[in-house]
Image 1: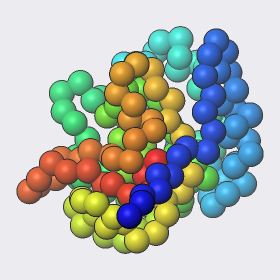
Image 2 (image 1 turned 45 degrees about the vertical axis):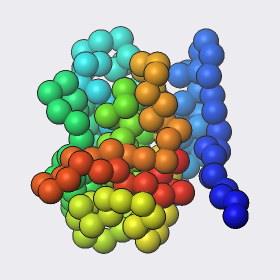
Image 3 (image 1 turned 180 degrees about the vertical axis):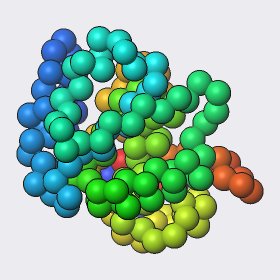
Image 4 (image 1 turned 30 degrees about the vertical axis):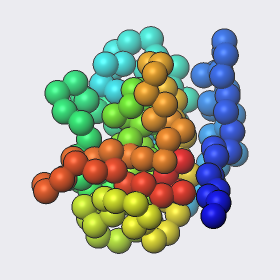
Length: 168
């Protein structure tokens, strides 16, 4: 028996890599609702990195405090529902931060295309449809969350990841 592992489409790294993000996003800007959802660690609010985020006026930039807790299913569902009700489905979800922010970006991108609460999908291969395009921009080294198959979420009953080939 063999298993296939789906890898990420593109890896950009090295000095100046962040400066390429705008060009990468422009390739997808006309998908879905023609806006981007940036999920950014609240640590960067008011710092130099905030000024470098290549967002446009139609985009949504959400700063999320991940200091006190891991991502929750309620947080993912609330974020998805608020964005869908205000603007629709974004072209891309971009996570900028550490592992928790990467997991939020991965999970919410999947929940834009899968019905119901994210609690229904905690486990292996429970996701029914691919999510929307998402990008992980790690700001700390070591977690590898930007390339892993799992988006770890704490739900009301369990802490378990959304894990499938589309999470990568």
